[in-house]
Length: 84
Image 1 (cartoon, rainbow, N blue to C red):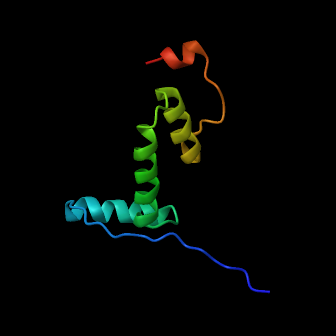
Image 2 (image 1 turned 90 degrees about the vertical axis):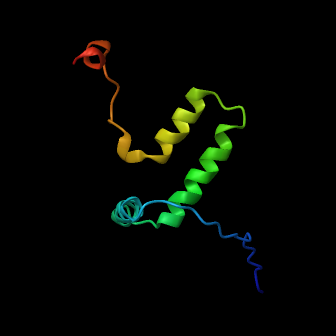
């Protein structure tokens, strides 16, 4: 029995940025084991969702879930958050 595989049609777009910025972004994506296209698609989806009535708190939580490396691993006390 064959299972059908459906893929969503992808369109190409052209963006402009400096060579230095593109190189740094590619280096960062490569270090994370992803492609710049992957990261752009995530950003584009996030950008669209930001306008869908989500509160700032919901958007923040979504960003934090997408960035596990930004997790401090614990909750900080009020005193720790106010230290300078």
